[in-house]
Amino acid sequence: MQKIVFDHVTKYFGTAKAVNDAHLTIQEGEFFTLLGPSGCGKTTLLRTIAGFYRQEEGDIYFGDRKINDVPTHERNIGMVFQNYAIFPHMTVFENVAYGLKARNVNKKETEQRVMEALEMVQLQHLRDRVPSNMSGGQQQRIALARAIVIRPGLLLMDEPLSNLDAKLRIKMRSDIRRLQKELNITTIYVTHDQEEALAVSDRIAVMSEGIIQQIAPPEDIYAYPANQFVANFIGTSNFIEAECRGSKSDQSEAEIRLLGTSFRLPILKPYEGKSMFSLRPERIRLESENTGENLIRGTVESVTFLGEKVSYLIELPNGFVIDVQEHAVEPHQLRKVKQVVYVNLQLDKATMFDESGKEAVYRASR
Ligand SMILES: Nc1ncnc2c1ncn2[C@@H]1O[C@H](COP(=O)(O)OP(=O)(O)OP(=O)(O)O)[C@@H](O)[C@H]1O
Image 1: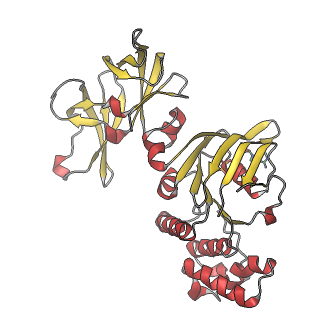
Image 2: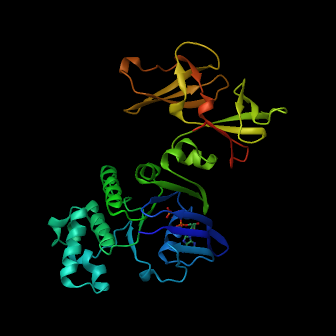
Image 3: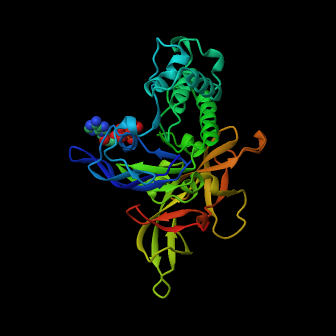
């Protein structure tokens, strides 16, 4: 168990920066996830931690120890990958014992530690089977047992669940989370699946084009996205253009014009110009009657029943269409296509970004 520090780490492939100035600290026992679309640099960052790649710039520390030049096998890391990487001709027991053999652990201790690890992943009863005729989920449990049996200081996982079917992924991710907390083992987890990241992580680093865009706990990443990329990548957002005019006398408040209406909001920094609101579909309210101020008349374009929720596409007067989600109700209470509704955008609960999308100008208070 140890904390991991990246001090301005950059990794090039040719002239391209696959990881660009990563600067962060992962705490002891933390479940930390690197999340982002394909090609954003998550695997490169993970491989740099493992020592498979050497960064061109910056330093990596395990605790107080700089490990830039420490070879992989001396970093005391357990690893689990997407493709299991287990030996098909060896038994489950032999697969898990492999890393202990390499470390010259004696027979008695090996037996005890392997069985302990197999119990943790609930495979003790299959110790003498060969993995080739076992399910994907079972094979991934073997890989997990093999990673933890060496008692690593750091556990690295790269898309460990992506070869499993949807139901099994959910079961396995909660097993991984439970085991990680039981062992209190610092873990860095790579995924492109935002739901998985939100479900298992203590904190998430969202990456795009080699750059870490935001580091925060799952709830904050969702509710307070740092920029437009994060707002777009995590969950669903409606993006609505607006015009922001900072008041001359009081720069902390601005007049906002959006969809033909005008209102005032406190802003985070003086800003004048085009801006973009990001609104979560479940934060927008629909009313059947025009009950008051700040409501925009709209028409239901489509109704999609999603089980727990219902998604309505609502057309606003200028032809702009937004997605609004409400908790599901009795079927006869569902809103109907072509029905007129009054939309309360609840902009005070939204986030507004500057024209570049790189910075928030307004966000809901916590
Ligand atoms: N060995 C390599 N040589 C050259 N370029 C590479 C190499 N490995 C990765 N890259 C490039 O570096 C960038 C980051 O790749 P990386 O594999 O880290 O992304 P990723 O986020 O893990 O994507 P994925 O989810 O698809 O694995 C990409 O542009 C990729 O093409």
